Amino acid sequence: MSQFLVVLRGYDPAEVDAALARAAEGLAAGNRAVRHLIAGELRDSAFRVRLRGYDRGQVDAYLTQVIGELERP
Image (tube, rainbow, N blue to C red; front, top):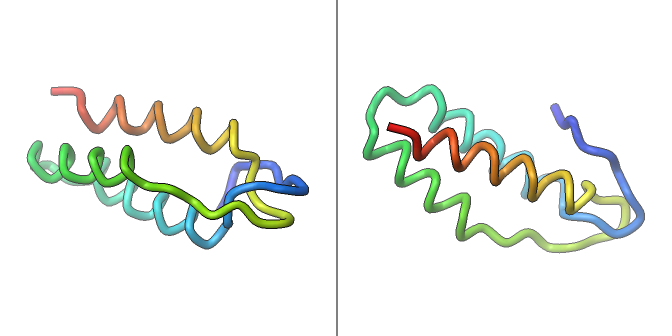
């Protein structure tokens, strides 16, 4: 499911994949309040760093983009 590089020390893939699933729910939601709620959840999320995890810079950049989309009117 992931579009991120796997690096020596990166974000836990299971945690990131769960956040991406939640982001997809938000993008599919027609309700603005739900979209903003999920954007807040994503903004507050913190992922554990582990060996062979997702590239942190890529994940952070993608989540910033998705949060912006969720917060658009």
